[in-house]
Structures are given as C-alpha cells and as structure tokens.
Length: 97
Image (tube, rainbow, N blue to C red):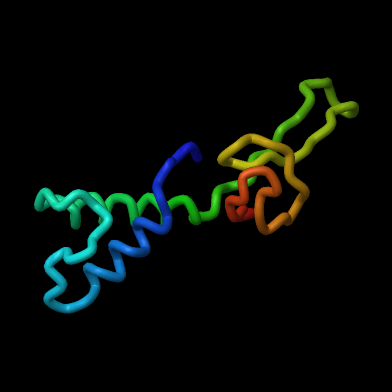
C-alpha cells in the first residue's frame, strides 16, 4: 500500500487514450509526450493493488502444546480470520493455499 495514485485521473486518461485518434485532447496527465507512459504505469499500479495476497500464519512463540496460531494479511500484517475473502484493514483480496 502507500500508493498515492489519483484513480479518477487514471480513468479520465484511459477514456481519452482508448478513443481512436485521440491525440491527448483533455488528458489530465502533463502533455510532454510521455503522458501515455505515466498513464500506463499508474494503471498497472492500480491493478496490482487489487491482486490477492497470501495469508500468513503467525504464532505467539510459546512451546507446544501451548502455542497459539492465527493468520495475518500478507500486505499490511494485520490479523484476519481464516477464509476471509478480503483484509478488513487494508481491503486487499486474500488468497488461501
């Protein structure tokens, strides 16, 4: 997490650049000839933000049989419940083995 990409800016840029023969008219990205490159990288980053992360198993470090186990989000590290589809803390989808 921690990305500060303007989702609306990416959507507007995609709407403009996907049109045939658009020539960047109204594009919210700086018109320096590289707007398509920045749009591409921002769109990919937003898509990657939606990728599922692995749940990780944690324990309290106590010896067996007193060890307690739980699961945490693979992105933010906060505790999640077994088979949660999304992390309740950061919103990332969670994939289980």
